Length: 150
Image (cartoon, rainbow, N blue to C red; front, side, top):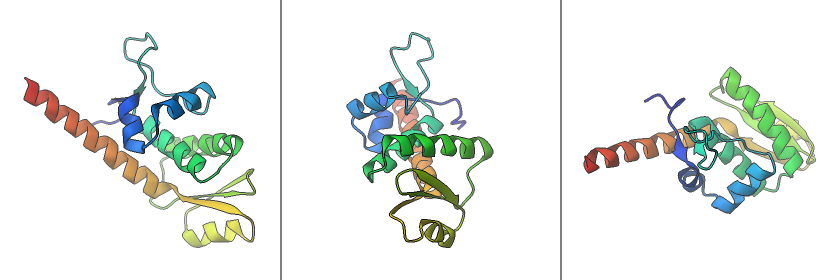
């Protein structure tokens, strides 16, 4: 299935990631997230692509472990660049001292980048795989449900 054009509702994306809808709405209002709008263009129903859902999971993970809004925005921008280029099999985010973001493709490099600083280390490649699998599973469940209704 081509998940680049497939979307889920905002509520379903929230369920996949484990984020309350109100939190999602706040992050959108703050400008952290910009999900796909509804296909009809009215803007009333947000749709989430696989990429949107990964970005939601990424923001949730960072905010959940105490990253500031500014650091989260900086890291999300960098993630979007990685997504455009293609996420490698192994990728870690290292956020130091609440304002520095580093990327590493090996866990040892992530630990070295953290050094003696207070740091957040996030396995981005694993988060991407888990989110993509959950997104695809939900798409398949919705497809099966719509076939049963026919």
